[in-house]
Picture 1 (cartoon, rainbow, N blue to C red):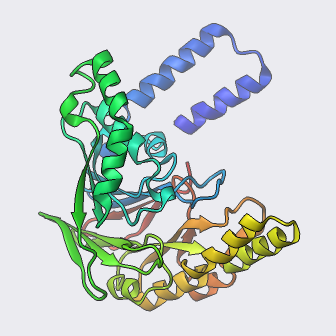
Picture 2 (picture 1 turned 30 degrees about the vertical axis):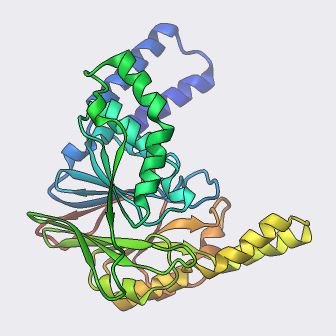
Length: 353
């Protein structure tokens, strides 16, 4: 319905003949639909996944900063909070006030730069009375404290303007939930409640440390989100048999081309960056090998580097990975999957926003 409404608006706008009365009516309907919708309430019981950000630090038209959403039953969690992630959550029809916790894989800027906005919109958009819990390995306290300090003036402004009905002071900001990065071959249980289990495992993103991946299990369904990492035996170990492996991927052939062009054009900074990032990310081929060897149900590529913006670039990005593991999706903002409880089905419910 929302896409049909958007298409209708686009056609009318292009024609240049929309009467003000019709525009007002369409806007009223659109607002009504947005305010009354809650995608989470429409989901069957199970484990659900959506990309609120499929990209990395480079700007891309269909790939915002790293952000993954996991719904277990009626509980909403977010892994990493890249640029525009929280806005994409809202665009997908979820209520940002329902976010229970955020799990940070590491503290690179592209994975945390939307955290302050996410906390504020959850608070003031849902009248939450407790701060947003942020799980992360050692160091998460300083990240959370920094955002709380940066947003402290905003907290007071919003409460002064809206009062407790919208912005109760007890719900402002973020609260850190630190944990020790587990050793290789071990899992750290972060949350276990009824049918839900959330665990962390170590990955290798050196010199960035600590750095972790997260595994979610709910009523017999499971998924693992890699965070940033080179090819990891630890991920392969703990991804054994998961329904969904969400794995970062950098295409070395395309980044090497970027390095070549940067060198030829005298862009020293871009040349160094394109050289340096090659050694701490997994390639699509390596992610496919991990998916194959772990026997996962489906592979979703995310944290796509470089951005895929021209026809034919996806084949260059994969560089043969599609022959290694055939059940894959190249992530875009809004890609979503459902893993119904009591079933082995893996259902793609959305291909993009």
